[in-house]
Image 1 (cartoon, protein in one colour):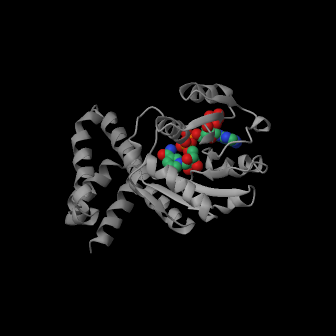
Image 2: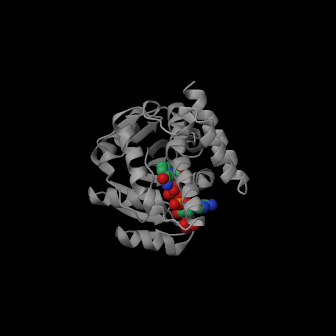
Image 3: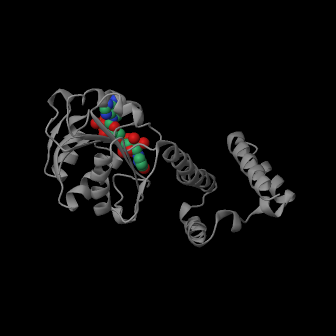
Amino acid sequence: MNIVLLGSGNVATHLALALRAIGENIVQVFSPNLINAKALADRVDSAYINNLAQINTDADLYIISVKDDAIVEVARKLADVNGLVVHTSGTTDIKVLSTEVKHAGVFYPLQTFSRTKSVDFKTIPLCLEANEASQLELLQLLATRLSNKVYQLDGEKRKVLHLAAVFACNFTNHVYALASQILNANGLHFDIIRPLIAETADKVMADLPENVQTGPAIRQDEGTINKHLTMLADLPELQEIYQTLSDSIKLVHK
Ligand SMILES: NC(=O)c1ccc[n+]([C@@H]2O[C@H](COP(=O)([O-])OP(=O)(O)OC[C@H]3O[C@@H](n4cnc5c(N)ncnc54)[C@H](OP(=O)(O)O)[C@@H]3O)[C@@H](O)[C@H]2O)c1
């Protein structure tokens, strides 16, 4: 299959490498910054552009993996292509594409991607949507070669999944960053809590998170909670987060 990648960021990079690894042909990479387009294109033996007027119009599949807010402006430039055009966004409606292009779909990989960290695509849930049965079949054939976890999900379910993913991944990682800030401010290194983070994640691989909650809030240890809030007196934004999360734990376990 001939594929055009639109975007050269975290997801586009991993998708391009995974597609190349299963023998697909990346014919062109587009990115507004030509250096970024070239960097990815060189890794998958592809042509590269930073001007959508030069788009290859003969490809079978166009994967738009740019920032969510730019998907529509990129799609608008693909009105004339006959191939299937998909985006990789959790929350963007398929209509954003189908109002602009002939054949629209979604190819949403439910994983956290950073350009520099390799991933095993076989384990990544791929959530597919398409307006036509033949296009869905094409996506399914491709997706099942990339991953062992392929789902057909409508847009509403996909949006719910993305919302849950923001809590499970993005917010969790931010809370790690806050923990790191507290440790660093007191001369301690993040390394010391890595085993705690690993065990916390490991426990929910075999059980539901509500069954393995620990800490002062579930124990209703008000003395400890108040000491922590006092320690955060000079950091009111962290104090507020501590209070909100403690209240949320108490509410779930009341
Ligand atoms: N990262 C994840 O974990 C993840 C997971 C699942 C799905 N997604 C989805 O995948 C898509 C890409 O996310 P990402 O994390 O890979 O983003 P990213 O690493 O920030 O890369 C964004 C890409 O968008 C391009 N871009 C920025 N502004 C643009 C514009 N106005 N017009 C055209 N292109 C523009 C950038 O080009 P230049 O670099 O050349 O400026 C870059 O190639 C998003 O829809 C996101 O919701 C992300």
